[in-house]
Length: 202
Ligand SMILES: Nc1ncnc2c1ncn2[C@@H]1O[C@H](COP(=O)(O)OP(=O)(O)OP(=O)(O)O)[C@@H](O)[C@H]1O
Ligand SMILES: [Mg+2]
Image (cartoon, rainbow, N blue to C red; front, side, top):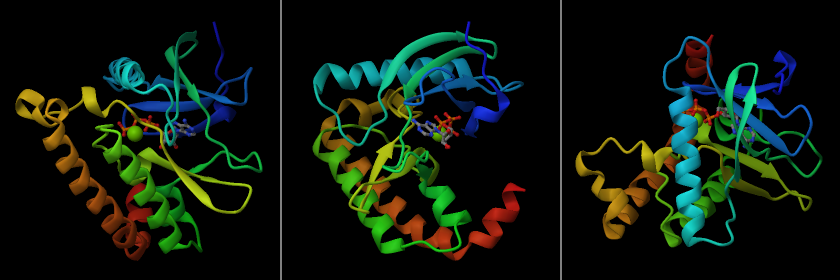
């Protein structure tokens, strides 16, 4: 059983909290948030989605790999890669950069996000919930940045009737293109509204 220390909490979404793995700094562990239904389910969906993606892709860039489940003192945990900047710092989400960082280079962030989106579209990786909180930016040695998707549960969370866009590639690509456009627009929009957004999270 792995004990997760509160000091090693990296962040949380609506369903899950993400902790640094106590024995391996290259890994994180996702567990359900206490008092929230659906965290375990999200972990299972994410792992299923990752395995499905791997069936058709031997090599994968721009994605945090999943390694399976472990028992923790906070319930069943999903182990995934911890994305770090080349200086060792844990990579920040686009949301944390755009909303909370005093200065940021919007054009550079948009370019990295677009590269990720084009990669997803070119490889039929139908991750439709590519929002600012589900993508981190890794700062590389040469000071460029690369975007990584850190939340892969989307394909098993598709709420559409019959889930057609996950099953018909043409529809999937179209939907992904719409979501990509929306992501790029939101990067600008959220930067402009950052004071409001910060206050709404307090
Ligand atoms: N691989 C990773 N490397 C670094 N940080 C991560 C990683 N995975 C998750 N995080 C951090 O944990 C947070 C929550 O993760 P995740 O998006 O998987 O949770 P969630 O509850 O499923 O989210 P949602 O609200 O989208 O349902 C992220 O916003 C990010 O701060
Ligand atoms: Mg998320």
